[in-house]
Image 1: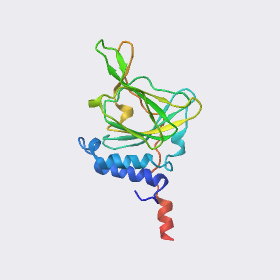
Image 2: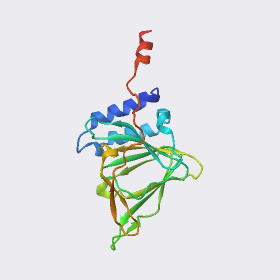
Image 3: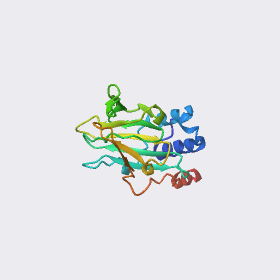
Image 4: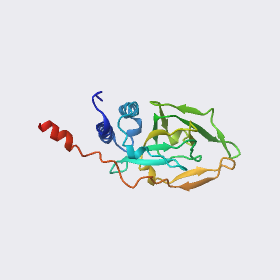
Length: 204
């Protein structure tokens, strides 16, 4: 995207790219989508302020956009100090991009006895970093804010309406899975489509 693009125009442009690329099979594998998503999270000038507000106890999941056919959704995750997820999966592909602060990702694999074991060392995402998720490659993990004293924000792109996807949380000691549906923290969406100020300015 041109460097002159800022604010909601940047978000609107990314959504247009993802919509053009969307198909049931191809979207997750499209290099153009990965490049566009990395460019989006590589700039911190577009996330609406209302989608950056933490909760004192729980991480928040704000829906930024859902494709009308639910082929993809874009979400901001806001982590208060020290907040973390349960161990969970996704059931759809995804990209995670760090916008502010940092988060720690610990992946898990199922051991021979059925319990879940850490899959290697945890990794840390910092602003501009992007990580890919795929059920086919194993997508069970726990995510936590890397900071005990500040807010962190990541942006997630999923291959479905993630707030309505039936997924699982896991008991690490037993490996037992429990179904859950995350929903969203917000009841409204950012207004991406009010371009009236730019059109008026162009009219002189």
